[in-house]
Amino acid sequence: MARERKLTGWHVLGIFGGAFAVIIGVNLALAYNAVKTFPGLEVKNSYVASQTFNQRKAQQESLGWSIKAQLEDDRLILSITDKDGRPVQVGKLDATVGRPTNVSEDRVPEFAYNGQAYVAYVELNPGNWDVWLKATALDGTEFEQRLEMSIGG
Image (cartoon, rainbow, N blue to C red; front, side, top):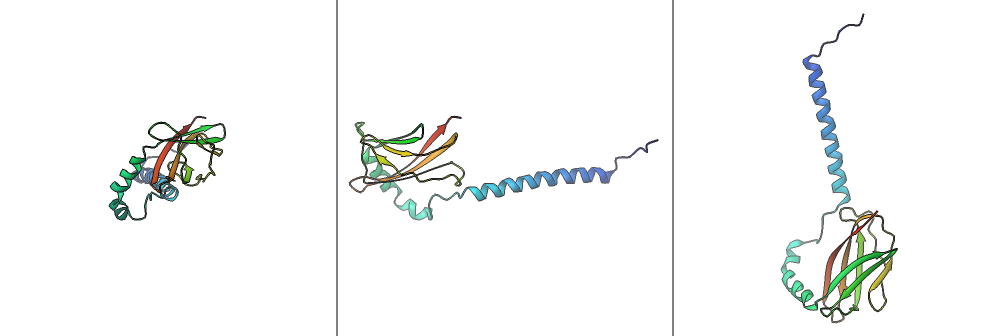
């Protein structure tokens, strides 16, 4: 005959303690991975960057550029057009493509101007991607923009 076991206060305390230990352990693991994979740093010194923000914004807006990023097959196409819709050729173009919350898949594609847009060959997995674009106009005006892309799976 099996002996009947009683649920005592110590058993309940152990169950609650174990459950909270699991919850706290998972939260700590998630917090650690979130901090480890996302630097959260846009500029080194936000105060210094803020001192010239309005001036840089006005200069950038005076260019009248519109930027569009799209992926066709394995080609990433950056279309830069002026206020009249004509293609713009820039003096310098730097772009980084990566996930919005993780730097492990960041890449810097080599763009080439084809007379209409800038094209680079990249392989991107399905999901959300950002393109951090830095361009310099032929007159030396700097232009920065983050573009969002969603690639279906």
